[in-house]
Image (cartoon, rainbow, N blue to C red; front, side, top):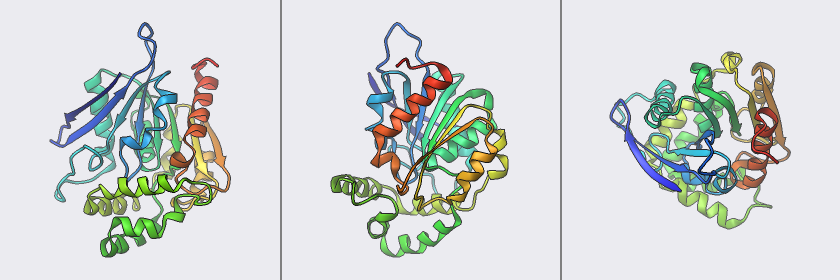
Length: 273
């Protein structure tokens, strides 16, 4: 009921993905793509899968340069269009004409741009801790990552991401172990690119029902951009997790899943209560 696979993108890179399907075999279940954060991989949704895969055919994709997907050479251009193309090419490969998009942090950058570029392919969008572009303040991380290494930098700044008073220390260690597996040069490249992008003036092009779950004490993105999303996305529900730093998808997975299911229930009448 969980299938691991990969495909070759049109530019030759390998894109890994998982399909989790615990829906009733006799029912044509809706498809939901899960897109993870920068420095993460599809395993970061381990705590989301049980609650969602009973109702949706889940497709978890490792963004290029992450997880089991290949790391592009420095000479291969990194663009938002290419990241969106990876999702579209996987949809085509699997015969998925339309899908719900659910994404965390930088995965939400891809989801937003896909919803703007190909609105007819997106049934809904739910993003967690994801603004229209990474704050340029993140560019200040890059010299430290290069000088100190990825894990030491993240360990030293971990309070930007987790509420240490309420988070199991084991989760913090696991997060650091996961992020350490990334290619540091690609991480620097990915963050450097994301911190130069801003599509807030294009948010009106997102036409699908949308849910934005935001950390009330955002420490990674530009918090003011959540107000911009509320103002410019035509059909949007904003939901704040008060006093929480950036990594609410990791810290509060059950609450995220419950709120996402409630959003789908209100907008699509499914899943049933």
